[in-house]
Image 1 (cartoon, rainbow, N blue to C red):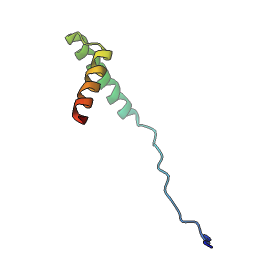
Image 2: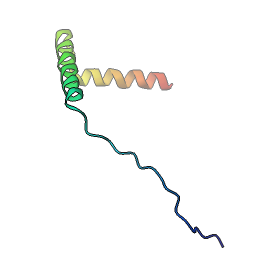
Image 3: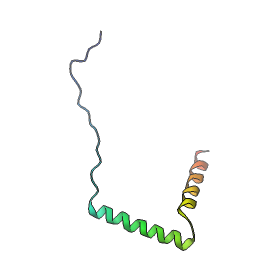
Image 4: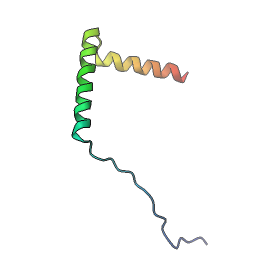
Length: 60
């Protein structure tokens, strides 16, 4: 019979709250991406579909 006499410690990773500077950087990047897509006449759906196709091609 196998018994455990002690419990091993383990690590549970947690996500830290993003700092304000990180959030601002993400907002600026999102705005830039929105402008680039609009300039090229590409919708978000088209971008996602192209990404999925490229990822599928890479798998094959």
